[in-house]
Image 1 (cartoon, rainbow over the protein chains, first blue to last red):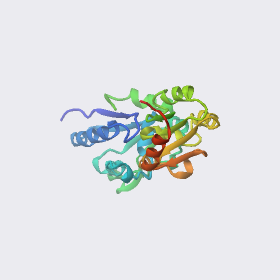
Image 2 (image 1 turned 180 degrees about the vertical axis):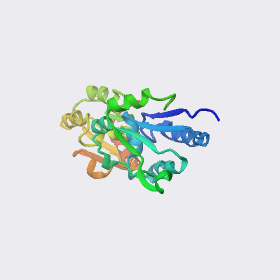
Image 3 (image 1 turned 135 degrees about the vertical axis):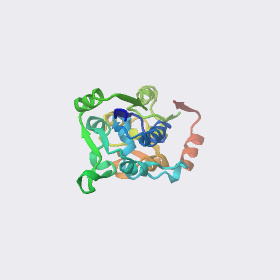
Image 4 (image 1 turned 90 degrees about the vertical axis):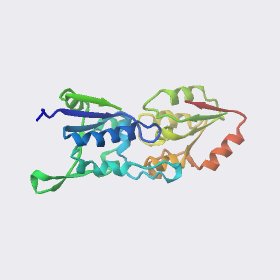
Amino acid sequence: MADVRRFLYINRKAPYGTIYALESLEVVLIGAAFEQDVSLAFLDDGVFQLAKGQDTTGIGMKGFSAIYRALGDYGVTKLYVETDSLVTRGLTLDDLQTITFEDENDGYAEKPSIIPVNKAEMAKVMAEQDVVLSF
Amino acid sequence: MLHIVNKSPFQTSTLQSCLDHALAGDAIVLIEDGVYAAIRGSAVSAAITEAKGRVTFHALGPDIAARGIAPEKLIDGVASTSYGGFVDLVAEHQTNQAWL
């Protein structure tokens, strides 16, 4: 069996104004089938993707924020969120939706998928990857 | 003049350039990702607050709701407008300038 590689998907753009956020999610879901060690990074405007309460009825676009909550079922359980980016944008972790996964190694206990990190910690996460895909 | 800004102020310097060129009495309407500039307590809130005395700010309500920005998170003095209100703003001003 081939070695498992560490994949990091970097999200730096706000949702809906451009297609990057949705495209990134779709690549993650497709890639999840290959059972690699996947992490997602949300920094800069990417943190807006995780804001709770997204109601797209008025703009005629399909809302996709619920898909982030389903990532745990696809084995994607590490969502790194840069806290510096939140502060710059007037947000706190409370403004983000709650995203959890069931840890099969711990009796399927429900655990948070969002991992808050500062810039320095995010840089370390990036440096540890085998494959980095940016959106 | 009605200025229309559709990009996030954290992604480009477009909003700042718009503010630098807007004259007293102008109106600025934030649409699409531009509405992120209306969140209070951000790195650009001071620039908006400073400009409020010169220009009137509007932000497109449906774009605000789509992005999950609660009404109480908006800067005081940025009025939420509907698509109909956006049309009215365009009709009320002699010219409009889209800052892409």
